[in-house]
Picture 1: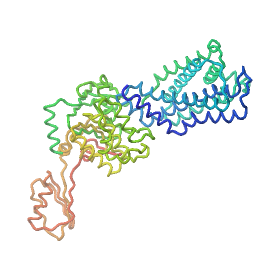
Picture 2: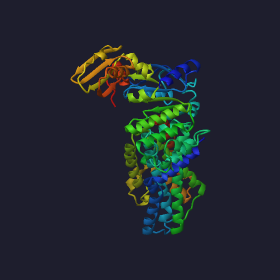
Picture 3: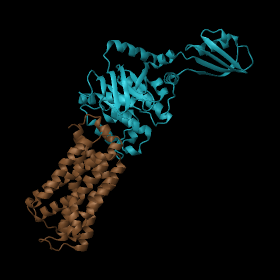
Picture 4: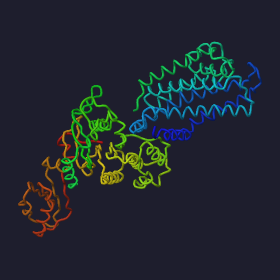
Amino acid sequence: MRGFWKLTLVEFKLFLREPMAAFFTLVFPLMMLFIFGSVFGNKPQYFGLGTVDLSIPAYTAMIIATTGLVSLTISISAARELGILRRLHATPLTPISILTSQVLVLFAMTALGMVLLIIAAKITFGLRFNGNVFSVILGFLLSSCSFFALGFVLAGITRTARSAQVVAMALFYPMLFLSGAAIPKWVLPEAVRTYGQILPLTHVVNLLIGLWLGEPWSDHLKEVVVLLVMMVVGLVVSARTFRWE
Amino acid sequence: MATNAKTTRIFKVVSAPVIQVEHLRKVYGPTIAVDDVSFEVYQGEIFGMVGTNGAGKTTSIECIEGLRQQDRGSIHVFGVDPQKEIHDIRRKVGVQLQESHLQPRLKVWEALDLFASFYESPLDWEKLLEQLGLTEKRNTAFARLSGGQKQRLQIALALINDPQLVFFDELTTGLDPQARRAMWDLIRSVRDSGKTIFLTTHFMDEAERLCDRVAIMDKGKIIALDTPENLIQSLGVESRVVFTLKEPHDIACCRSLSGVTLVEQNGDRVLVQGKGDMLVVEVVTALAKEGIRFADLRTEQPNLEDVFLALTGHELKD
């Protein structure tokens, strides 16, 4: 464990120095909130909740996809391409602590992005919440872990940071718009909602919105199973494909 | 250099080798990267591996560092197998890896502070910063450092755990001649502080001037291993002395010198070829004795480049 927290702290600072990553994780969701919140308002219409109330779990899903799929994939493959992973690997740090520090920073940023959204929505739109706090936290943890596992798979199979970026973006954008994360799912056409089921992010959106509304876990067993399978398969695959150089 | 070589030989007798490699072999698919390589490195010496890119230097050094697993053969560092005692070895050695960067936005002081935190009793990194002339750059991001500054930082990181054994892999590749010479001085001062150094390079002049012993690698094999002086002498290549006569004069005095094998005169330009380190002294003494006035004298000593060319039949290219 020696050096683990220092490494995590340094990775934290480096994340904040990367303007693109910090923008899309922390600032962009707030922009979405203010733009769409001021357009549609937050009048209660779905089970007593308004557009803004339901956009918070959806935007949280967007942040999870940003950090797990895009930031993690690109930062790991860039660190590998530059020989940074190899250099850390040559120190007494254990391999698991090197990777854990990366995950921990991205996880903290994802949580921070969500907390900022909640605070901003509370202050400006009087955010409402029907669920159980612990259920939402648990759903958030499960969703994050399964997307981080996906990011590790992508980082393992792409050779360069450039190709990692292309692959991550090619998966990220369709998911963002077709899963209900950026565009509310009730405005999406029926066909998109049906075929959107093949996108992992759709299950995150459905789970988090359901938990936000206070629906029981038993209504979301499908999402839980999909995300758990994704996490386990992702970990198994990345354990086999992950390379330090 | 000569005294260092002697010291090394004495150490050979009294101390166990710091690195012991026996029949090392590493294969990548159809390519045999390292083929039955054996050697030992002794305490306090600068041991160099030279060869072209792809000769197997980096594969060898990375097997010894424990970063790669060899296919065959045994490696011992401080008497233990680096694969089995990887954490022990990583605490005791310092490494600089070939083509390894740090995070572009990581500042110099942060890098040192971070790497210091990986070890139980690291050196005071402020002092290291000063020793390596990086104090002014402490708040500069890695990406904004010059090539030489980046390598000096890598050296600092390699030394931060006060290791007894330090590995430098192609440390001076990509540096300008002035920065390379500055690196040599740094490496010598590291050795003078009592550490053992294992380096790889594809610069023959670097190996010749810096290393106490040199292993020449070609196509995965060590084809020669000795002090640079012995390697050059073993070749039997003769030195040359060339000078210009200020006025026409008979130069028979040069022909009669011991060890001289060839004297050529072309107008006022004279070439004397022969064996031994003292050739130039003998020639100059003879000329002075005869009162022959000369100018523009230079000597051509055989060097490690000649040894490499003679042994491999091909030139060393960057």
